[in-house]
Length: 318
Ligand code: TXD
Image (cartoon, rainbow, N blue to C red; front, side, top):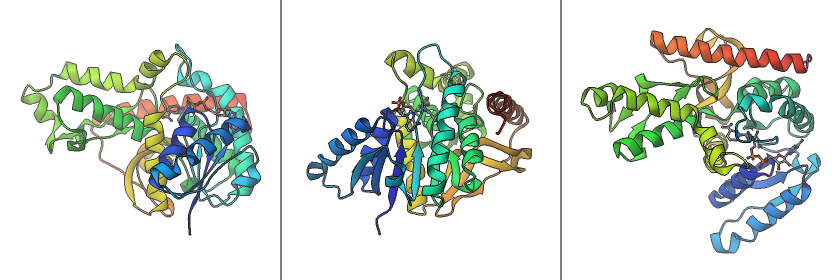
């Protein structure tokens, strides 16, 4: 039985998500947007490539939640992206309002869906989405860590001239300047990164520059594009999460997940490694943090908490 993925938001990321899902033949796709024409136009355009790409899934565009009912997966990009000079946090007010509307739309039509939130400021918006929708906490997750980890790995591969598939690493914490690159779990051709530094192939300054470039990875692309923000890599990251759920791959992926005491944190979403399988977020992986990593992670959690308090000032029902 073919699965159904609804994409709430048919903009830059939403359209790319639809295209990637179609090329993979992962599921039927419903593109939903308040701009109905955008959803319909992109769905039809991608569908018309099926004879060439030889995929066999159905695509439709709509602005009616009825067409999205009983979705297996919902990926949310509805919202406004950053403009040059804006921080992800600057989007809070407007995107909070949008996510409240989206939560209303999905909670009755797809109560059993696995919901992947991409809209920024991600850590707050995914938390608000879960509270507004009342969907189970293990079925509402945020996409950020996979993108940030992928950026980090890419920058290391470029610097060290090593294929990306031979670099393992991930980031923890919030999706923003406070994200924490997990150096203790970073390996280049199986070698811990501290050995790469000892060998002189990479200096500490060069590594710190790469970490900083990762933290500001989104802003770098916003600067180039001037209108809009990154969408190809974010879409690839969202599809990896959807695929792990639909195919029950039980991949270990860095995502913004609900913490209920793990890492000493309760009742907040934060970027941590989780297992995604047919039951959604099946497990939060608790890794041993070095003292310095623990301090940075705590700082990241505080940044998320502070921004959530700002969100509660905007909407006291949170
Ligand atoms: O790693 C991450 N999580 C980030 C997330 C990576 C990159 C971009 N990030 C954020 O995703 C970005 O800051 C935005 O908040 C979202 C979506 O970015 P995108 O580039 O796709 O934005 P677009 O192209 O403006 O698309 C947003 C669409 C647009 O077509 C609007 O008409 C639609 O959202 N929209 C809505 N759809 C449904 N329902 C409502 N209420 C609605 N309001 C706007």
